[in-house]
Image (cartoon, rainbow, N blue to C red; front, side):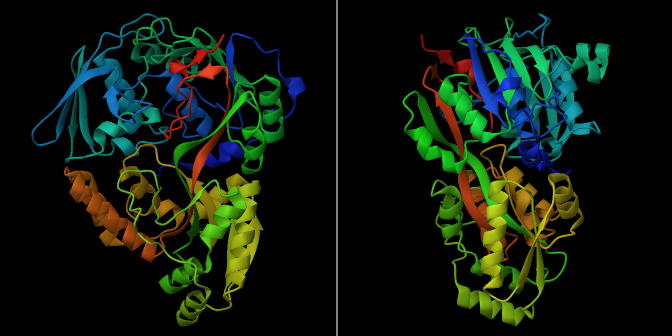
Length: 509
């Protein structure tokens, strides 16, 4: 499994975009306007895991399956049906009649081409979801056959992830991948590109050839505008110059809740805020020192202080909203006396702890709170401020002691989450903590191969118990997506998979 590249989810939020209203062109009344700090940096769905790109891909490229935004259930997408062999190793997908935005048919060859790019191209940002695939082939223009190396319970759900969008093989081969995705890509989703001004905005228009009849429900264009300043985004939303504000700051929520024409929402997410501890070097190569650090943290107080009570304290190393999360597990309580005892037993009293922190307000708050609580038990924490590039470089190399951060899971299934966060042999170094427990890695493999949901639940509960007790990471809190909407829009939301339901959206007259 390759590195999961959640990297850009953080860096995208730190890149400066347009901070002033004066730089923005006039708004169109028949457009849906989204302001966000997250950039669209590429239109190639396999090339980047940045938050802004993930949100864009869902509008441009259809996948074999789609997730119902209301129920969360997997439903037919470009594949109108599928068969699974008795041994669980062969999946046969039957494609519907569908067209690309240039009017050409979407065929099995396009599907195989698109998925093979994700699985094998050196520039693929996230091949891990297809790691169980042995081979893929087009049996005929409407039939795709996928053979797996071993049974893999999350496979169907993985085919709905953001980078699984189907692209035109003929177009990519004719123009080459750089040109094919530079300005006007051939798309298979609800929208096509009308105009792209990198570092400013991406304008989308309904795809006249989209396979879902009657969708998008509105013929409005969509403007995805990059606005770094949260104050500017709020001003635009309140003045009616924007319809949707992504990444509302915790301190802005109460004010927006009282605005008459604004629907301020805390939407479900799979985001977890955690503290990474470097298990590769002292003090945190010592498990008792890691446990001391965990007992020292009052994550209930942290969640209340940082998110003003809008996030839930975390109890395990996995996001609270994914399947098989053990909501009844007590977690590690805040116990200063126990923390001091464990630290003394570990022999690490007085050790310096380098806490890496980027410049974001939340990251700075978390670093300061960690510093205060660890100082209280006898460690010597020092905050090291770095830019996001240096943060990723240092954590990737293991050149740090601790760092507070966040990640999210692409699907409700926990497989990708455990591979990313707590698996020492899955390519991510347990999200750069270098935590490794062969028993956990064995359970991760068992979890993917087990078809019985009840048995899978027990496997993932065991993973959560072991990794929380051994402090693979310190769970802090589960954060919702804070998004504000103009009440003139109906049917729009941001799903936990970071997908906008724009094709379902209408504009009230």
